[in-house]
Length: 173
Image 1 (spheres, rainbow, N blue to C red):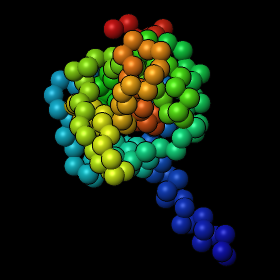
Image 2 (cartoon, helix red, strand yellow):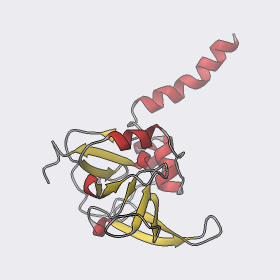
Image 3 (spheres, rainbow, N blue to C red):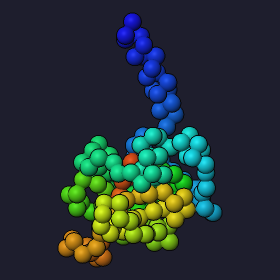
């Protein structure tokens, strides 16, 4: 009886998540780029995103370090990374590097116009938050002057759960 109650309680959760995308989806074709700001209600965002994507993009959350998404990211070949919220092209594997921080890292965005930054004090000190310009979704943070051997000496520390990957073999932009 307890098992039946438990299954009845979690079945709707499983069914809801069946239609949502994977933590870092890989798709075969680049998504169409938004031509205007993407503005949805909270209910529409919750319908579009997985609960984890919603928590990160809409509530400025952070995924666990060194998780499955990070290991998947490290194994991906060349390609482009798009916002899971609105399909905006954000990063390219050309600027990807392994900072060993536990989150996907880039030293520059693919198109700086698609990224906005702001200072947050959520941890009690100043950090530069990175957001998608088109949907205002929280992506992560950028850190300066950490001494990485990259052209910009920046580390865009990005939550992989809110990215979609399109391999270069199909990304012909």
